[in-house]
Amino acid sequence: MKKAVVLLNMGGARSKKELKEFLKNMFLDKRIIASPIRYIISPLITFLRVRKVWENYKLIGGSKIYEHTQNLICKINTLSNGEYDVFFAMRYTCPKIADIFQDKNYDEVLLFPLYPHFSSTTTLSSFDEADIFFKDKRIKLRKIEHFFDDIYFNEIIISEIKKHYKKDAHLIFSAHSLPISIAKKDTYEGHIKRHVETLSKKLEDEKMRFAGIHLAYQSKLGPIKWLEPSLAKVLKTIAPSPVVIYPISFTIDNSETDFELGIYYKNIASNFGITSYELCKTQNDNDEFAKFIDEKSREILDIK
Image 1: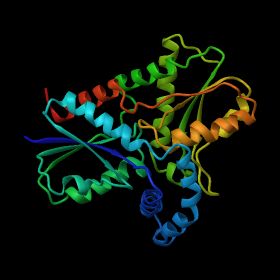
Image 2: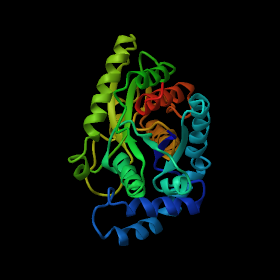
Image 3: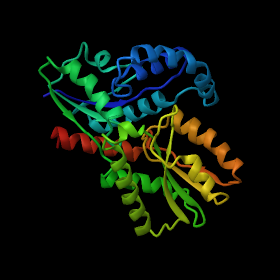
């Protein structure tokens, strides 16, 4: 049987044109905005935000999500030993699922979202697109819904946090926020809280006792209520203590880690008097992350 693994992510902007595509498609997504007025809102928000957002992207040299993902794919391809093929598909920019499989034939395809926690706005949205494309095709479609509770995956996270450990520092797990109206119907917040509890226990077992461990949320947009506490609020509470930030929602660095956490919130922390602000890297093309994906894929695709 011919098998494939597809790594799913949101996409990123390497140019202003690509940013317009990203914003337009994101705000057209019914999992982001359920109302039919999204067809009016999407072009409006894109027009109003693209210039300002692109200035932020320019500060980090454009999104590195493609570079990291391609490097990760190369490592997984080596590990797969030709027993399965691996690709990546983006939800809001190219390549899309259809771009990859339009002229390819597989018996079994595993959808592997690069989101550790399940949410309708990320994982389910990507599954929606895949379900539509594969609907009439004779392909056995397999899906990974989440992996935040995987022991091997969490060992990779702990290994990264170890590099930044300081007894007097506060560790903040920063998660992408969601509007309360979506979060109430979603498993995402529960997954995030369980993940923080799991990692906190592992850190205790490893004798890494930070001055405090906190959960905070970033990336709020608009006037409606979102999950709290905000990262800015938590930073203000613990200032001027040293801070270590771990971006718990992400496995590939993107504008929300490189710009938001690396620049924007670092400046906010500085304004609060925090002089030691360290940002952990996500998994990106880490060798262990490539091994984790290979092992997980083999398990589900029943490849010995």
